[in-house]
Length: 195
Image 1 (cartoon, rainbow, N blue to C red):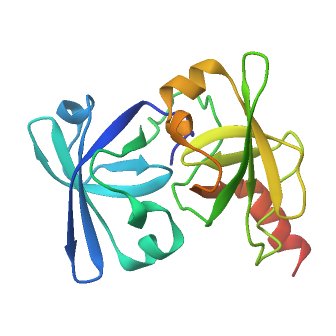
Image 2: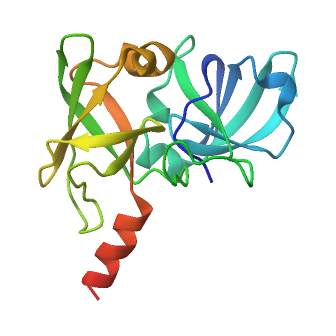
């Protein structure tokens, strides 16, 4: 389980395709603290550390993951939001995040406000559980955010300078694809209402 509070930005150093899988090697300051078989969220996607060498580690994404996320479009030198799994007994500073991306969305607008930014996203709604609510939680590329301007298949988020500088939001532009994980509580409520 994760919180959606990004720890640091990792840099993609190597990409190796093997059958339907892709092995990503990333450089990150947290690398000396990682262990084999540990879970790390990459742009919101929970992946298992399979090897560690110096300041780099490798994770593997299977075809199912590549189909439902934006990881397949990563290139060498790309920057990725990273978060290690939550420590039991730690503070839940964001919201409950599973690291299981529901789908991707397209950035439809980036608007500069007076000291902040508003990012708008649109997605194809295929399920009642793919829902946002005003002032509810959403995870965009692994970042826990508050929804504004919630519509049936679109929403916006406001980004403060700290989040902008310390996540990959500074690299997101109109037309880019991002990963979405809808709020788990909202998904359960939607399921109960539709049974």
